[in-house]
Structures are given as structure tokens and as C-alpha cells.
Image (cartoon, rainbow, N blue to C red; front, side):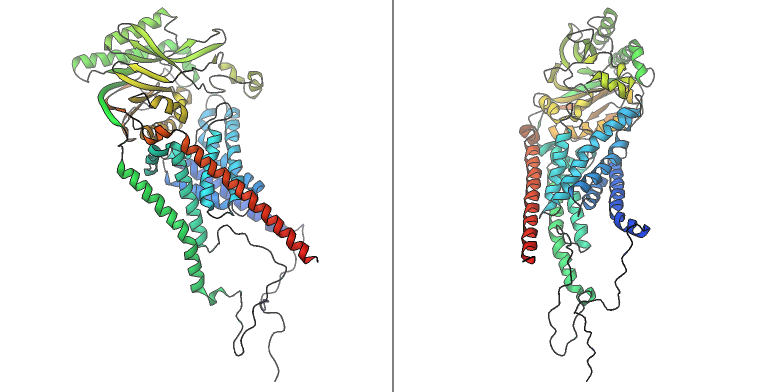
Length: 587
């Protein structure tokens, strides 16, 4: 009998001939070599764009989770260097549009430099995600590295720039309630963990074993000999065992699915618990005055008296309405940052205008203004005075975190080469040295000025000894851009985080009254004169987030760094094992 058995080893493809080698210089060869890197970079750019849409004014917060999942997938299976390039593209696709408002009146150079500096942190994150993707439990390490990236970006250089933190896209999300237990870093961790688990679930559904990379082998492993009377199975025939493949995918999906279910359960529990950690002191009737500016842009500084008169005029109208019973008489009045760009302590006319407004309304006004610094020729202070109708200016708060390259110019001679507009800042703002805990009439407030609302430590400092948080801001420089809405979202998160009402007093909008549960009780429009009069509930006591401060953040950062150490150890072990294997094969 003639044997019809194929003499080739079992597992050798019969009807799929091996393609001939492609010449190195051919177009097909270039595509084959570069298709995967190009696809990853394009995927990173698309994922970065999705993250922009998660932030106000668009507010599609679930897209933050989708974006993180996509970023996790495009950084898998590559080395740290390529992960860094993918992260850089992701960061640029996110920060360039998100921070476009920074270049409205000073040109594109400062805006693009800032976006590139922020994207550099994302490059480091991309490298970290790439090296920890092979570890068991990689979604945990990846989420922790997101928090570590933000912790670094929030603190340096020049004191950091926390804009674009994942937590700040979640003001309307149930995840925002986690901030009352671990601050903004816990919200970031939850968002990043949800995205990473979603990526793990997608990999499991696609039949990709998490944490493993395919190894190239020199030759196929021979299959075990078939028993007599049976037909050898073709190892490439996956249809022969679909049930086993399905079971394998289900087993791979269980950890990710369990993690998502646990995250949803914890979030549901904190939402159901609601605002219980602080207690009411008493209700206060608060008036937030938005005087508006004469025209858009930096030029409003040339019309300082007009800005001051606008706020005086609106306060006099408020006083008349209160006397006529059209609105409730306020307990305190809040003016925004730069309501008076004329120092009332040195200028008698400005003093008289503010004093007349305070006497008319009959209650203290928190007045945002400017004052000379230690060297009046070169320095200045961004300051808020409590202006009493009887005694005039009293307690004050000096902004503790002036904005670099906006309120003061580091390396001025070098910065001038990048943009001549740095000379618009003629005097450098100097920082205050005390938190903004002030008594305004019967209320104890915690005052921060403008961008300070983005910094965890500055908010923590004032929240403990206050019944409400006040954010004085001046957004006129940024026109009708997205900046004011992004900053508003930070205020909403801070209200939940510390269980206190947050009052935003803006020169040109958007001013707002935010409840302790993060809901907008009232808000103004942009570039309109308005007065918001509302009753707010003063609060005392600390949330868990207020008591533990930055503790949860440092714990999560330590977890992320531990992941990097474990990845380095695992890589060294793999290299050692390969060395031993090669040595054995070579005899």
C-alpha cells in the first residue's frame, strides 16, 4: 500500500506558501515596517482629541474613560521609547486645543510652548504605561501612573500648572463624589482605572492575553503523535476548538469586569451617601457682583477707573433694590479680582468710590484690587480687602500663587526673545504668605484668587477654617474662550470635595453660586453686568478629603512608582533568562 502521508512535519502549512522576502527598499517593505507605529500615533492623536471633548464647555465626561482606554491600548506591546513618542502625540493632541485660550492676546508662541511642556509629562506617562503593561494587574499600575503624572505636573516647574487634570472633567459625573473622600487625585485614579479596565476588557474580548507579548520562534513546535486511526489536527485550525477559545476569553475578561463592577458599586455608594460629612452653621444671603469691563482683552487695564465704576454702580443698584424690597438685603458682598486696578489705599478717588458703595449697601464688601509690593517700582501684589462700611479696609489676602509668565516673568530677558508681550507685565507680582481665611461680616470665608482654585494645597489651606469658599477671578483677558467654563468646573469639584458652597466672583463672567453638592444654584452670562443674590448654607467640619489632605495622592503615587520598579525587575529577569537560554543552546 502506498502511503499518502505528507512527509513534512506536522503543523507545516500545506496550501499557504511562504511569501517571498520583500526587498528592503520597496514601498511594501516600508509600509510593513511603519504601519504599526503610524497606527499607534494616529490612535494617540484621536484619543487625545476625545479627552478634549470630555472637558467643559463640551462636558462629555464619559469620553475621558474612552480616551484613557484607547491610550492604554496604543501604548501596549511597545518599548518605553516608543511609548514616550505615543504619549507625546497624545499630550499635544490634548493640550494644544485645551489651552488655546492662553494665546488669545499674547500670540501662539507662549501657548504652544506651554502645551508642549504639559505634553512632555504625557510622554513620560506613555513610557510608564508601556513598561508596566506586561505586569499582572496592569490596569492598577497604569491608573496609579496617571495620578503620578498629574502630581508632578501640578507642582513643577514654577509651581506647576494643574489644568487638564482628569478630575476637572468630572464635575457633572457621579465620580466627582469620590473627591469628598480622597480629593481630586482619587477622582483621577477612578477615571484612569475605569479606562484601563475597559481596555483590558477589550483585549479579553479580542482574545489577546493581557500582559504577554508574542515570542518569535525559529521553527514550529512539533505536535504530539496522533493515535492510530485518527487524523492529526491542524494547530492553525482554531475552529476545531471554539468552545475552549470562548472559555479562555471569558476567564480573561472576569478580572476586568469584576474591577468595573466594584468601581461602579463604590461610586454608587458614595453618591447615595451624598453630602453628609459637613454640618450647617447658618444661612447667609450673599451678593456676587459682576461689574463687567468696557471692552475685551488686555486693553481693559487702560480703563481701570471704568471697571471700578462698573462695580460701584452695580453695588449701588443692589443697595437700592434691597431698600425697596426687590431683593433680600445681603449679609456680605463679593467683588471679583481686579474689580479695582487702582490701589484704593494710595488713591483717594478710588477709596471714596469703594467706600460709598460699602456705605450704601451697609455690609462689608470683599474687594479685589492691587497694591504695591516691597519695591513699588518693580513689584506689585494681587490683593483682596474686606471693606467695612464703617471702618473701611481691614483684613486682607494676598494671592499666594502668582501665575508665571503672566503675573510675573521668570528669566525675563530670555522670555522676551520668545514673545515681546512679556513686557506687558511691567511689575512682577509677589506672593502672599498666609491663607485667605477672612471674616466678611458674619461669615468666615476661604478666599482664593483665580487659578489658585486648581491647586489642591491652596484650597485645603482655606477650607478647614471657613464656612464657604470664594473664588475671585478675572477672565476678561481670555475673551469668550473655554477658560471660564473650565475654571467653573474646578469650583464645582471643590464644592463636593470640601462639602462647602463655592462662590465665584468674576469681573466679566462667569460668576456663580455653587451648592455643596456641586450643583449650580445661579450663574451669570459672559461679558454682562449682573448681581447674583442667593441664600447659601454655611458649613463647618471637614470631609475625609479635607482631613487626609494629600495623603491618598502620595499613596497612589507610591503604587505607580512600585509598578515601575516591578517592571524593571521583570525586564532584568527576562534578559537574564534569555542569556541563559542562548548559552545553553550554544553548548
